[in-house]
Length: 591
Image (tube, rainbow, N blue to C red; front, top):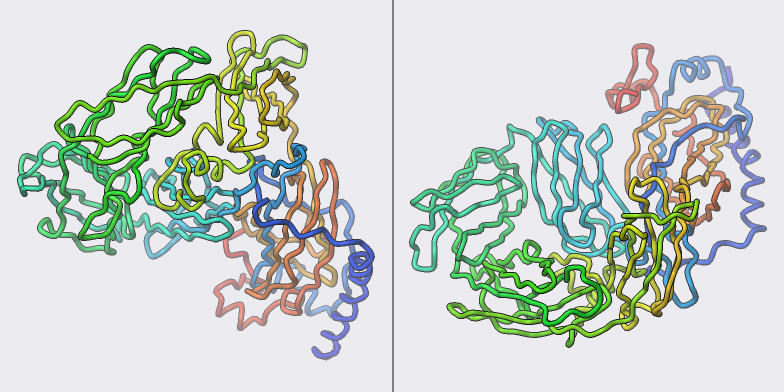
């Protein structure tokens, strides 16, 4: 039997020989130029698939019989190799000169977990219901973990829901190039009973006020009292509405278990104001207009708890049909900014400041003027019109376009929940002839990314366009699935290796990689990626950038530490609670 020290030296020698070619190749090839952090991007595509190659990338090391027997049963390695892949620059649409790549600015990250009784994992979904990432849905893995690395900056509201239907609603702050963390307990045993009152400024009770707390709804009684028997712990979102009153929002910290007594919690509603909006004259298409109302300067703040008090995300957008007016109720008095967006037209002026008075009729009629337009037709592969196809126009950085058109700083979306404004993102449905019309905002962006999706969702077309009026034709083609491949050579292995792959922030399941296989990840989008690889909290190398071409393959090698090769002792495996019946490790998720 070869002593452990000699065996370790042999393994290290083999690893050096097996990976030498990869290192030499890396030295000879020029490195990818580092990217400007403002050019980070992302897009949705089918999840990549982790597989093994048809032939092993390197021979299996011959090891002593006692070690090989354990490896044949499974693995003695406790900790998984963690590989995180982040898409830095999307390569599916060619950018025009002077235009940032599609999805620029979508570099905010979120990581979190859903927990149940005794902090056991809970599976479910996290849906963005308001803010710059509205409509995005994140799914958890089997351990309740979720994440994404291609989100837009800004305050966002998410609806958390377990597979068993338990729900929670939270407000999260997403910052560019930063990671936000959200851990939500959905355990029935951790919930808190909450009682409170809804009153006016004089302290009089307000009955029949709707209180939405952590995605649950209740109504106050004639004494103004409301009750929720089970509210999840943590910082939750509360919104209170009542006809004739200004709506109220607050983030409330809920303790784990116990109860909040009714005399400890009171929400005060002020008298609300109404605003009637209309569009004077018709310019552009006959489609409805979208109006937006925002506060000017410092928002209304709760003097006691120091929080924003009005839920502007519930007001916007406001749809106005041609020739009609609409009344918006439940607004707070004070100064507001008004904006209007219409296909083929813009507001004149683009931004209007107005003061809303309580007890008065507040009215504003928007004036429109003709704007640069992008018109075109979407056709099927056979040349026939693509009736009811969905066409979308996106600025390279949707978040930046939104704050820019509001004449605000880029960080303004950190102070309130803002939807993507039409200057940054538009969506229209083609008519029966496949025709569409979109409004360009050349002062906001020099170019845009145009995409079309057939009514049945099976065909698409994508291209970049300059912010110049004109006619464009889009021919639908079969949706091209992400087809790039990454192969990571892991030489020197003689037993299975647990592996966990995270792609664009979405965590995958822990799987066991056979000793004869390299780590192969299929289904990657074309573009520039970053790989970060670690084992047992130790980063194995500096973050590596690599490029993926459509139907292309990229390869590189990684030197594994001794612990990832030889594994851990039986005692270490027993302490970790991962020992199988024969002493080999079983994966944390039972696979």
